Image 1 (tube, rainbow, N blue to C red):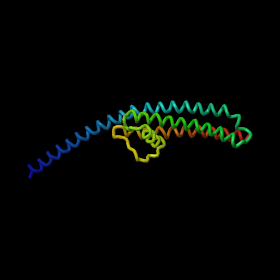
Image 2: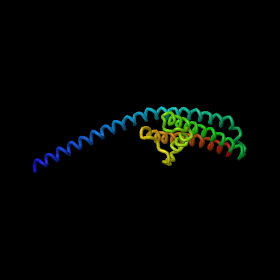
Image 3: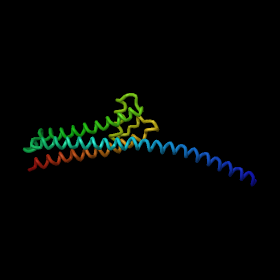
Length: 173
């Protein structure tokens, strides 16, 4: 009985050792994928931030150049200025989606750029449809792009709100 108990313990220890070794190999692969995704995703986020800053500067410049049209309470003129700001900010967000899509295409995740752009837009807007999923090797890039998109859409919203507030102040004087 003692012999059987010792043998069972030995078999269990070997099994646990094999499971631990398998887990170690898998986690090394996961850690490497995590590191690779971070090394790809974080510079993309910085590039998107720089692009967003350029487009915000353009949107603010547009607003300042057309600010004189806001006085007098003209709904159409005010709407035109706000629409111009919105279009510039949206163009910036679409450009960021395009950059992420290009990365996905270069990594071989998609054969068609249109499919990569669609997937990128779903990630950036944090919709998460789940109809297209990237390979396990690069799937962390999706959540990184979603975080990037949430931040950049928030920055765009703040800029658009600045334009709204400015127009309200001009039209209530």
